[in-house]
Picture 1 (cartoon, rainbow, N blue to C red):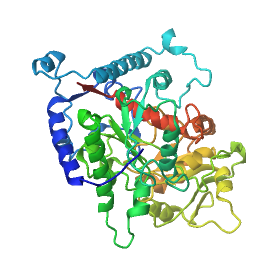
Picture 2 (cartoon, rainbow, N blue to C red; picture 1 turned 90 degrees about the vertical axis):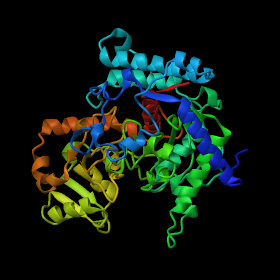
Picture 3 (spheres, rainbow, N blue to C red; picture 1 turned 30 degrees about the vertical axis):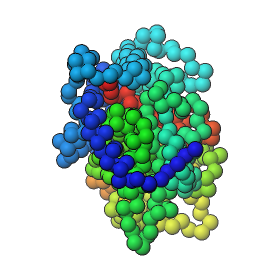
Length: 479
């Protein structure tokens, strides 16, 4: 039975702090040499709206030294040193790490030797990734199949709905609730044996915490701090896994704008854990080495049927389209300043006229503008993909979803803020051949952004899981 209580809060937190301090003395981490993101920079990189492949130099510059207090990526203690210190070896952890080591080797082989028959012709009854929408289709395919076969996730049962294990499955933050719901029902990845798990899920919902505990008048953000700190204190006191890894093999997920803020209050959660966020903003210390970006999908009614539409490119009479609040961030204001009412080929609306359908406008547009609002993520990116309209992403410091697998440049246009004034020339300069190829790629990539209940292979739920799988592969935990 799930129980969530604040009884003996001070004692629990004190015990958690002591146990973390002890664990930090005996647990050592190392970025996997064979699967570090620097080592596999060619097939596995991140795309950001900085204008090209993402460099980790943009991440945690000011807090880099502080982070090293929590995770030391340089020091390695071998088995002999552990034995000499009289420490007990963790057999279950060693088995978990042996599985991950095998996966790393197989993915590395697929990445470096794509023509090898053992990696180029992997059996898959549903789908075989191929084409230029992928950075390395062979490595992705191998990784995905290994994930399905090996990956195990333990969901902490502590906590009661609606703050835990539950979330809204409609509107702009729908993906947070949908992931919670699908993870609760999952039978492929979820394990009830924490000793065989590769990662541990912290099932708190930032959306629900704010909806039920946050007073919009008093605006006391401490309600989120108390909830998250208490929860980590409870699970770290009850189970050994948080303290064993200092949070490195744990993950949280949030699509709320304040998702990153929810991790501020527990330093190990902020610096060490995998944070799966819609608001993947590197200027706010999103770190793609360990954090994962996932898409913001606005399911207005909660319905997940008939999300996609088909209209031939030749029938799309509008060059570029956007509808949304002018005052929702500086980037949108710039787009409206340069193009609102200035050119019939670029149609911008704060509010659509009566009788004009938003979905029909998407279907009749060649390019769909996706400027960031107050935060970097925008649901319009996935709306454009569903409508087979080429997304024009206008943002800064945004790590795009699944960009360690997908080549976003093959099915979208990424526009720097400085290029907004030149928008029409850039779009008109795209040849019909290139445009047609991008539309075909948009159709192909839809698979990875579709919401299904129950989930289907390679859909958005499985792509989120794959992003977590990759981050877990990127670190080794030594007993």
